[in-house]
Image (cartoon, rainbow, N blue to C red; front, side, top):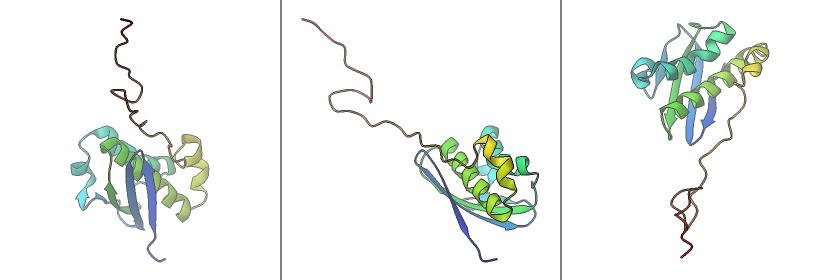
Length: 128
């Protein structure tokens, strides 16, 4: 099979993931996932699709991620891995879909409005 790149996005993070059969080595930006993601929650997010489909340790993951924060990056990688697992085995779709792992989360930061300190915050109103 030719190498295919899977794309995952979350907030302003963009992850490009290559999945190939192997021993379960996960590298993010040429560093091991344990070093790249300090928090256990983010590492769990990355391996969650493998745990659901019971394919942990069967695929090597090489991910490049840019933009956003660590949580957004981990969830972008999670989406890309989920898409790749469905491409490898269409039966995985039934396991991943109920957990929302195949849906791109559309929530973004609301823009700041002019004349206001933040997106929705207002300066204190003075009647006189």
